[in-house]
Image (cartoon, rainbow, N blue to C red; front, side, top):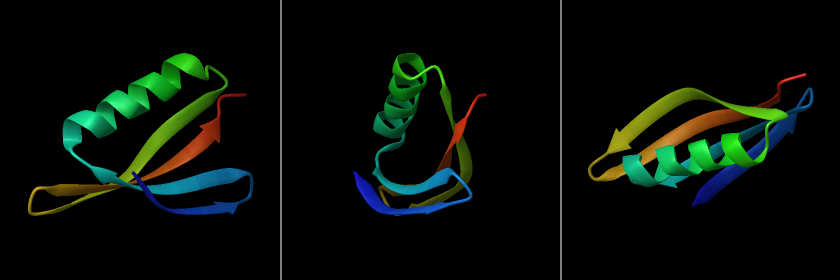
Length: 61
């Protein structure tokens, strides 16, 4: 689940909420289906059973 979004300088920043397995699967799916973009994980925060991943979607070009 996307918790928040922000965009600056052409980079989309996302905060995602979910289990580690689902987040990694989502990142891999996006990387496979959108070869012109790359998801870079900037920070991972764990609160109990919930994982928050702060990432940036950047252009590969």
